Image (tube, rainbow, N blue to C red; front, side, top):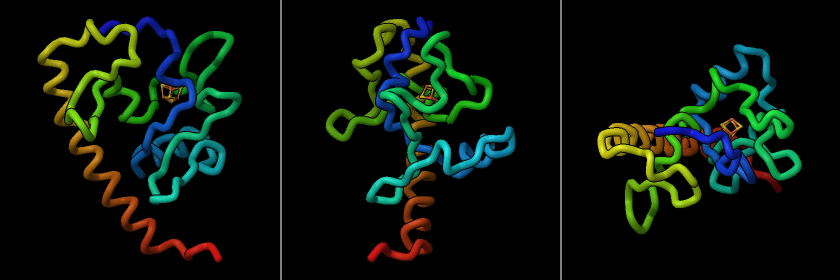
Amino acid sequence: MHCSHCGTCCKKTEMMLSNADIERLERVGYERQKFVRYDRYSFARLKNHREFCVFYDIQKCRCKIYKHRPLGCRIFPVIYSEQEGIVVDDLCPMKNTVSKIELERKGQKVIDLLQKIDNEATSHRNTTPKKK
Ligand code: SF4
């Protein structure tokens, strides 16, 4: 696909993170508390700051961690929709540049990634003390 760097997908992000994503970003110097939040189902997600992902540079319209960005960001705009399955997200203005081969290749990655994240969230739920 051809990315126009519009930043739409980095605004109010709810991107889920795998443990591998978190550890990769920690290795390059980012503290997990600064970029990870856990939702009520124990899924790790990117934090936002002023309506954008904490890693989005609003002035330059660029991802500050592009080389190390989460796998879900690399796979985007291919996503899993509960109603339709693997699809190209309508949110992306360049969605028409995603080829059929890319959709198939990334679609399999989405499924693998979601399975992994789901297992990790289950483990997080089982090991994190409940808030009183
Ligand atoms: S990590 Fe980068 S590509 Fe992913 S949402 Fe944040 S700014 Fe966008």
